[in-house]
Amino acid sequence: MELILKQDVEHLGFKDDVVIVKNGYGRNYLIPRGLAHLATTSAKKVLAENLKQRAHKEKEVVDGANKTANALKELELKIPAKTGAGDKLFGSVTNIDLAGALEKQGHKIDKKFIKIQGGSVKRTGTANAQIRLHREVLVDFAFDVVADAKAK
Image (cartoon, rainbow, N blue to C red; front, side, top):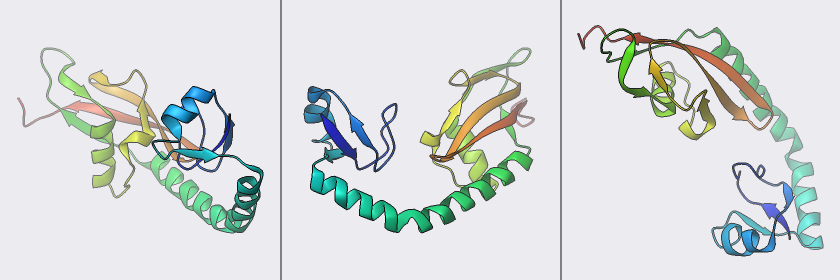
């Protein structure tokens, strides 16, 4: 079954991509949830025209994402967390914590576009995350998890 995605779908594609999926997945999941619609010949023509008109706007969005990516590469971020004995954390630092810390620095990034290596951080030290600012712009971001001075 050939579908046009209305939104980004994890592990499948981005908005306005034409994808081929199994009939049940398309009919029972993607279409009822409003994530996709059938890729008929007329729908493909409309999509091609929309993409052609949107190409210039898309370039500006990519330039903005690249500008944000360069700002993130220069940013040194320290996230304070409560620690126990040694370097082990009480709980963990997740993409939600990282999104909040980035927002305090002036970079509003949705938590679903942040992937921390290993899923979460459970020890103090340097950790890495991958941030998707645009379908073409991915940033590898390193941040530090430090012991919270107030917690001790």
